[in-house]
Image 1: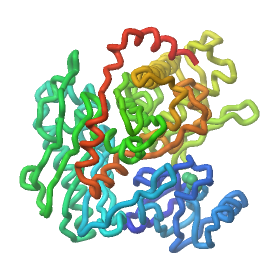
Image 2: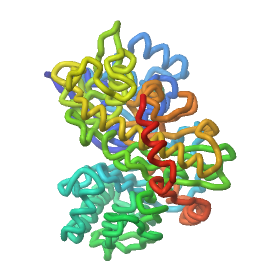
Image 3: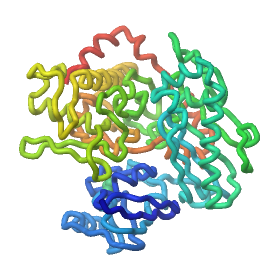
Length: 494
Ligand code: FES
């Protein structure tokens, strides 16, 4: 198959892709968000074609006209790569929030670096603090993945004697990402803000994670961790400080704190929820008065783990499924042969199989077989369906119990923001049909990497906003709710 190169500006990156690869499949790995999920309605994924050709279909033309975009613009979500191209990513010229308002920042002097330290992926951006422009981006798979994909295996590895090594490899991976950005833009950053889940913060800081391994999983408060580049053995200088922002609770870290800032949940009058469907399924619900949050036992099913054909949203993953005249059709990332399915397609699969009455309300395969063929060689096993139902029930019951803590019903939540890597591909109708979020589709918004957006906002707003949120936020242990078991079992149904 022919391949082509795509040069990305202002990132200074070059990637090679197969002929006919949709841009949405490759750009999301560089932190580019697709807020309307690729419907072509929000215009937020627009890219300027600096060199080369991108064919415009009639549908794409219609969307461009509607958004009043001139001839040198394309919507990345409607474009395919059929030759060598150079693109300017408009999204990196200013910070965009899903509530349609741009992040208003007070210009500052110098440069800052925002880091999202995820269990699976690491993303760092170099920001010009005078205008909030992204000057460089680096992404890496978290090298701790060799100790296991999920948090529990990382925590076990720490307890098993690998804590020091895990601290060293994560510090040097992030140091390497920052060095790469500074090589391209030789500046001296004023400050670095890191956010991540509580376990990642403890490991990065060299603190004991063992309280997270056993009941009551109580770690107490994990405040701001301050470092110098000397502490971290980074060979570049920072004028100001390096700060890992504080966690909210045992399994609700500063990535969720950053998400609250990014969504503006802490300033809203109406009840709002933030759900991160990543490895740990964290939820925050509240408004400007009070916020409650929890981590759920959703497990890593949405990231493809524990699913026989599951995989992350990378080349070869089926990212979505839809029905075409009664037949299940798949979209594969990177225009290649399917190797497995990622979380978004798993949600599609369950909604479609239920619609076709191939599975019942408890997910049981109606014909009695142990698997259902989705497409090609990709089969969904009964155990995969069960795994999904456990994860979706964890989210649905989390939302229910947190609302109960606020003395409201789920229905009183005005907006739900979805964070998490695979959000770009989620079909919201299918999500609602599975019963994971029991609200009308128009109240649910995809928001991409809220942790990174929030980390960037911390570069401008500082620690004050973090402490303001911590003061009004309560961490809830869902399992301690007397109705937890009943609610959880009820939410297993589709
Ligand atoms: S127009 Fe919204 S994601 Fe492309």
